[in-house]
Length: 211
Picture 1 (cartoon, rainbow, N blue to C red):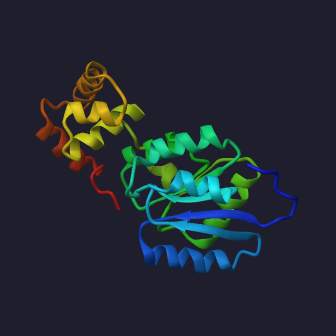
Picture 2: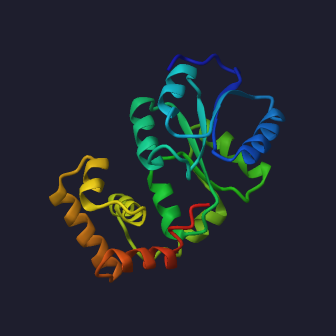
Picture 3: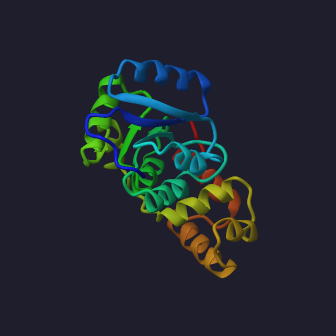
């Protein structure tokens, strides 16, 4: 991305699939003199091309977006545009899911029930090079007892979405053998023996509560 003149407004890209929430955020951002909204999205499908076209300095991203895998998108964006700052918003109360959000590579993680002051704090911190985890998120993260790898978590979500092992392998660009191994480790950690039990466990853990 091009160098940004000092004291220039922060170029911000807003991505959230809920129009009402997005409109509310836009009203809040209008009160911040140092923010310039350059684009908004309701799907991950055009995220990469929009980042390339608009060159934002900051991405405000809902973690639960249609059109792709949010964790994979964050990883790609950070590899392709390392100076891009990413603040993730989520409505989830699942400690396990929030752990995966925190591990995805975002610069900040906030819950959607936070306030304007917290968002301002997060923006200021990430733009100066620091990370920010909302206190409410940190409290939940400290309660995590189950240690799933990011890949195991991805596979769990895809199993719960009804994908077969072959479909999961294709989507994640893995060999069927590797996918089987990840799934075997996942089921061992969760203490389940089949997909039905895995889905039931995911519901109990709150992982299927996507909003």
